[in-house]
Image 1 (cartoon, helix red, strand yellow):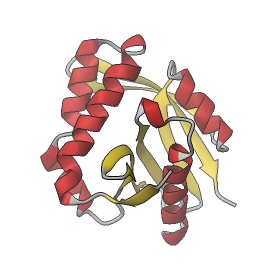
Image 2 (image 1 turned 90 degrees about the horizontal axis):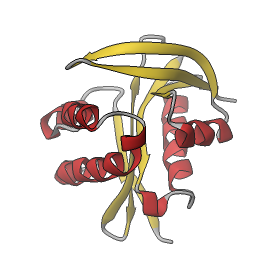
Image 3 (image 1 turned 90 degrees about the vertical axis):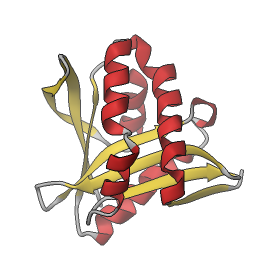
Length: 167
């Protein structure tokens, strides 16, 4: 497998949004409603918003490519706590899961945290997202809190907060 992990380029933003939509429509219908999936995709994968994030200090958008196709991505950003880096998004196309793509993307996040002298990576995932919870536990993340957040549109996120302390 000739996997390439690199920073997201401006001309890849629309492809990233399409990949996110494909992954979410495959993964989330058993976890959240179709209406919430649509709402969150429109909110989080707007091309203009992604391009703005790309140029903000402390934000990282990295993509995994197989040949010229995007097969996964990760977004991380600074947290208000100077010791933490927030892992905001990590997704891998279902056909490429369990092949080391997620681990490679996570390694990029850990490297970014170390460069920024952050000792903890924090993320949130839906309490019913059992596949993600198992994967994150495998890579050393532990549940540290439960949160319910109103995200507008009549929807809430019912999440676990997970953290990993870097050695």
